Amino acid sequence: MRDTTRRTFLWSTATTAALASVPTLGAADSVWLNAEAPVEVTLHDVATTTGDAYTVGNGGFILERGEDLWGIAASGGPTGNGNDLYAADVTDDGERLWVVGASGAIGEYDVESRSLVDHSAPNDVTNNFNDVAVTGEAGEANVYVAGDSGSIYYSFENGASETWDSVTPGSGSNLNAIDFYGPRSGYVVDGNTTVFTTTDGSTWEAVGIEDANNDFYGVDADGADEVTIVGGNGTVYRRADAAWVRSDTGDTSLQDVEVTGESGVAVGGGGAVFRRDAEGWTQEATPTGSNLTAVVDSEGLEVAVGAGGTILERSG
Image 1: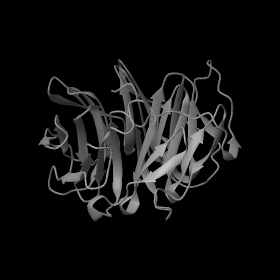
Image 2: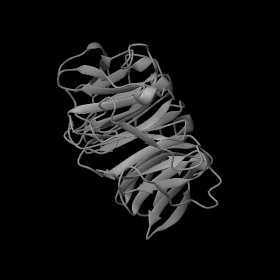
Image 3: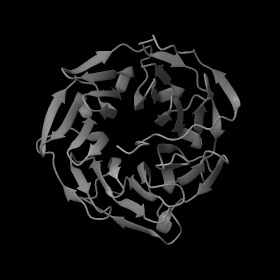
Image 4: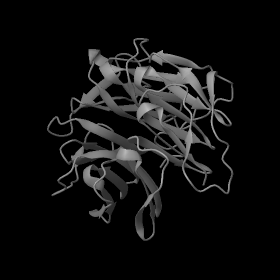
């Protein structure tokens, strides 16, 4: 992955309004703990760097974590209409957070000035956007947005008006997750058990997965041949030597995954968290039964988010 990976971005140290207290996590802790969110909306995505995090969710909320507190960074989304936000990604320098969501919502959040720029409805498209991947530095980013229409909307000029183009990699099935490991190299998965890859950011090739039999919901790409995908019925696929290797974790639908080398963590329905080591995947205990939608794994801190404002934290 890039230095700032999918769903990771810089924490601004300024104190925010509506702060809520969370437990302090010490280095010796190795269990998942509940953190209190300032709102009770479903949270769809999360990112972290250097132990601090942002999360985005329904109502256009962007929440941020201070030293031990979660607060509201922004609400209402980029248009101010309260469109739900489903995903976030960050520029390589950590200075801009891009968010996407319902009704064509696209926003660029400056974590230093704490301002949110509206890039919504590229080419007048108002479909639901499910995920976003960003490469490059602030002001010069390549932005890739995947949505329900089955198309990827992309801009190689930081989302400036009139610079957006689109491509439909497959049959038009909804695209659920996208991740890039290079400036124009990445993967996307759709709701028809298909995986696509690109090396130029605009043309895509199908690379599986035959006989998958389950929808795909999350993808983590570290390189051309270092990809992990999760989906329905607890399925996990890893690409190695141009082949897909399947693992099964049970019946729980998995929504998101983060993998680094032999280590990884995946989350899904009913508060399920699974951890990967060299011997495979093992379920961990969590203090919630809420559906989990996203997870980020960073040095010193892991954060998972989900329904009803659920935020779980685990020190590493």
